Length: 479
Ligand SMILES: Cc1ncc(COP(=O)(O)OP(=O)(O)O)c(N)n1
Ligand SMILES: Cc1ncsc1CCOP(=O)(O)O
Ligand SMILES: [Mg+2]
Image (cartoon, rainbow, N blue to C red; front, side, top):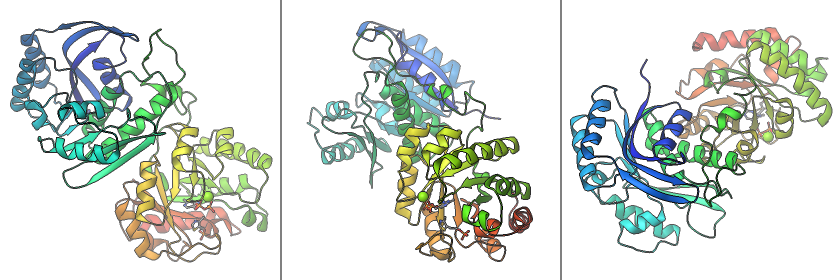
């Protein structure tokens, strides 16, 4: 099986916060292999740079030849390229051994600049590239991105992390036609050494894994923001700028407590959403209803308990977690991040009037599943930007389970599916009569149906679930 492969051509940082060391850690954290061609060895720490020694050009040529001739590199990421000779050698090597993409931090408009797929200058670097123009506003950053684009790269990302007086870190992306603004939280921390290298190598890792450029930038930006957030209070070194922890995910659930690993979109196939009123009507406890839904073949469960006090809700959620975990079925909590945290659920589902997915991600960490209800393409775009894992789209059909919920029909579902970069589950009025027609829509990212009343407002939850699952399976196989 091929392994997504990034080659970083950069300098070594003895403090391991930036340069080659940051690139290797970022790629490892994002699941890509990272080989390295070292252009310079620096002596540095959290106080600054104390020394630089350039690697002889012939040895750089040899390193490039060794890796590129043997190791099927997908993407080259460049950092410190300290001489015109080194840039020339790299350009020649890339002509001899072409790769899928080149990501460069780009500090000068050299031959490599024009060959780059994306260049990622911050505002200071962008200003320098443009002969010292001052950049103070988003409009300035757009103008700069447009000017830099004219030098040859296919995409430009001007990073606004250094712009003063803003609670947001806004980056401007330009593809030659359109601008996209990437907005993130500005994390207050001294541990920012290596963010530029890390963003670029994270983009490279995502491109190597097959992402589109826009998607790669979004994932990379989310990764850097999460890493900064998780490292904001770490202390290493005595100087003013410390490194951050690229491997922060190893300390977060699910890795440290053995729960579910990563979200599998196929789990949206038959999504059972509980309702305490319905359970009461039929004399079912939440636990019994969840057990029965899993017995019948539900592939993911959401506890949507609108009429229950926090304490009994948490008790039930803990019991359901045990049931779900022992069956390998993820359990999500509707709306209540506090309950999800307290029972260590696999994730949370939120709607447009709930706390935002971005804030939920901050609270739950990167390993948990976040679903967002979306009725429009704009909401779908925002959910993706906020770091959600899937969308719930509906009501596809009229429903009485959720009051005042507009019906979107197949047209509304189609618009959201087409616009969404995330997997989608359809919801609202779905039952044994119409579930097949939803699955027949066959949009590639429409992964399944979410159902409340047709499973839980019934006497025998397990047989209703089994019946619905066989209807879905008759239209589409679950891989
Ligand atoms: C899978 C799924 N999709 C949509 C919803 C609706 O969420 P929301 O809009 O927040 O409404 P409430 O469920 O909170 O009433 C959902 N719960 N699950
Ligand atoms: C929670 C929710 N969100 C959109 S429709 C809906 C209710 C779905 O319930 P049912 O499957 O009984 O129609
Ligand atoms: Mg909600």
